[in-house]
Image (cartoon, rainbow, N blue to C red; front, side):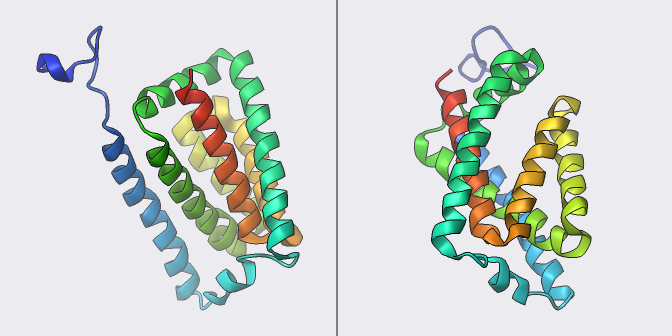
Length: 193
C-alpha cells in the first residue's frame, strides 16, 4: 500500500489518526455502550436504578471526594507501574501515538465520554444483574481483550475498586469521578512523554 508523502509519518508506517477521528470513533463506541446500558435497564424494568445510583447514599460531596482520592491514587500507581514494566510502556507508547496531537479539549471530552459510558455499563447495568464479582469479571475480560494479558492485574484492581465505590454507596458520581481522574491524568502523562 502506498501513502502520499504528506500522510506517512517519518520512518514509514501508518498515517497518524486525527484527534477529531479518535474523538468521533470514541463517541460512537462509548455512546453505543451507554445506550446499551440504559436500554438493558429499561428492558428489565430497572431504569429507576440510574436515579438511585447516580449520587449515592453519602451525598455529592462525599461521593466526588472519594472518587477524586481514588482517581489520584490510581493514576499514581499506574504511573509507577508504567515506568517499571516494559509491557505497560508499550501500551502507553501506543496510546501516545493516538493522542499525541490531541489537544486538551479532545482529551477531556474523550475521558468524560469513556468514563461515563463505562460506568453506566459496568457499574450500573452489569453490576445490577451480576453483582460486584460479575461486574469485575466482565470488565476484566473486555479490557484484557483490548489491552492484553499484561493489564489483567491492574484492570482487576481498577474494576474492583470502582465496583466497591458503587457497592459501598458512593454511587456513579464516585466511580465516574475516579475513572475520569485516572484516565485524564494518565492521558496527560502520556501526552507529555
